[in-house]
Length: 276
Image (cartoon, rainbow, N blue to C red; front, side, top):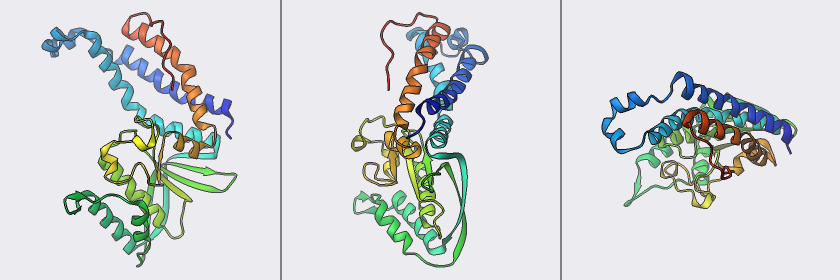
């Protein structure tokens, strides 16, 4: 179990760095300018209150940088929980030629192939078994994974393709190719590789229903899929997800109040802030 106090502090440092950068942008370097908004979109301005577009202005400058923050938070979790975490880590190995050909074949069939009137459905176990039966010459292969982690106590190595909770199809295709290559290496360079999402907007794993990654993985059943708590516990050990929740909730109130007062120019409402 990770040192919760140390992990909480490290998580908060990452979030504070991002939030302070966002606040500086929306308040100083790139503020919402009402006159420019009215001039650029006069019809919108006549129909919709400025506060709506001001909120959208903030959202765009908040959501975009959060993509890289998930990876930084994962590295923190791995370092504080398992012992070692790296972002954008290069893994080198060799893969037999026929395995590489079969990986391409599988990806092409999932993207374009049909069985009757229905698209071919992904099945991780069958696909990997088919790939691993391929032989041929050994070819050097490099895979750069989003996040790499080592359980230094148990001598285990893990690779993660970490994407936003609603990833697009192209991202997922690339990630599946990487993961198949990692499992095809001789000898294996990691003990396991996963396609991971930091949280589940559909709440339960069995309810996850975003169609784009579903072209490449069975998001509800494939063993290489980790969503939300499953991911945080795997990369940081037991207690990691709870540390993450506590860290965010602890500093969230202060930033919410700043956004109300400094950006929106209103007093924060009296109701309690939402918690994860």
